Amino acid sequence: MNKVTIVGTGPAGLTAAIYAARAQLQPVVYAGLQHGGQLTTTTEVENFPGFAHGIMGPQLMTDMTAQAERFGTKIVYDMVTKTDLSKPPFKLWVGKDIVETQTLIIATGATAKTLNLPGESTLMGRGLSTCATCDGFFYRGRKVAVTGGGDSAMEEAMYLANLATEVYLIHRREQFRASPIMVERAQKDPKIKMMIPYVIEEPVVKDEVVAGLKLRHRDTGAIEEIEVDGLFMAIGHTPNSEVFKPWIETDEQGYVRVREFTKTNVEGVFAAGDISDPNFRQAITAAGMGCQAAIQAQRYLEHLEASH
Ligand code: NAP
Image 1 (tube, rainbow, N blue to C red):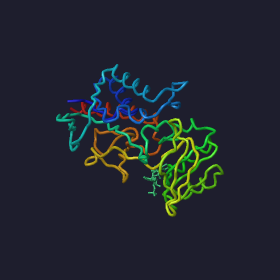
Image 2 (cartoon, rainbow, N blue to C red):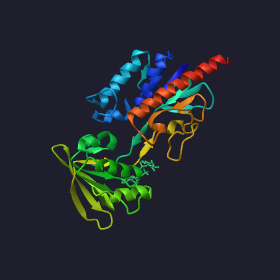
Image 3 (cartoon, helix red, strand yellow):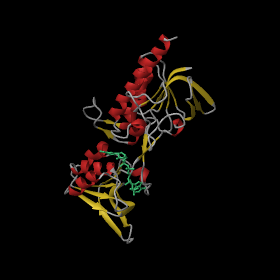
Image 4 (cartoon, helix red, strand yellow):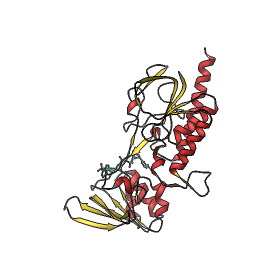
């Protein structure tokens, strides 16, 4: 039986592993489909403290993995497909095996939704992005576009307006999902140009990077081309909580509800990182929550031992 099982190998899962391993709890981590999480799809990370000259996202995750393994973390490159968290020990289905664990840390993250544009996967990091805070800096002094009509799109457009020369905000309908105050602020920003109601047909690619966008007016069908160096897709995230949902309380979007830092509604089950945080979604905040979850799991185990 595992003392601590962690699902997910982004900054939250791996930081939890480093702390749990150093507390001699021999954590077992299930890596899931995307070992390293969202940072493995970015290029340079310039806002993770400790790297004065930045570090490549995949390298940061390789180093975090090595750090966790150095203290005895076991990383299993497999998926958890089903769970039974009705009572301890908790059961996790991994392939044909059933794993039992005294505590569980859910760090499965959230996946940014994308538009599935032609050539999208190869253009990620070459003009396409799902995170203005992460990649906006690379577009300073250039023209960019943001798509989406929610609070994230407004926030990203305003963030980018401080860096870029011009920001097109492209949304598929006339109504916004974003709060009126955010829409008003974006509309008042002289650098933001609203393109409504437009649908993005495809990126215009030159020398293997984004050089523009082909747009279609939703009502008239007219095609228009705009010149931009980057497109930020801010069309929402999908939290990866499906496998825990029968037992774990989530909000209406599927984010795990936590109380007292990382505790879920099930005692002994904790959640850290983007799976329980639709607000900040940063590597450093996820890492901080991973640390909290490991310490809370350790305290829970100590309490269990003391009461037996
Ligand atoms: P969201 O509110 O779900 O908005 C997603 C937007 O993307 C919608 O406008 C939607 O268009 C559009 N969209 C979805 N799929 C699309 C597609 N395939 N093609 C084109 N457009 C598409 O997501 P969010 O903006 O990420 O916000 C998530 C939550 O976080 C919200 O509750 C939000 O209030 C909160 N948040 C708050 C703040 C803040 O308060 N500062 C900042 C960020 C986020 P339709 O409207 O046409 O469906």
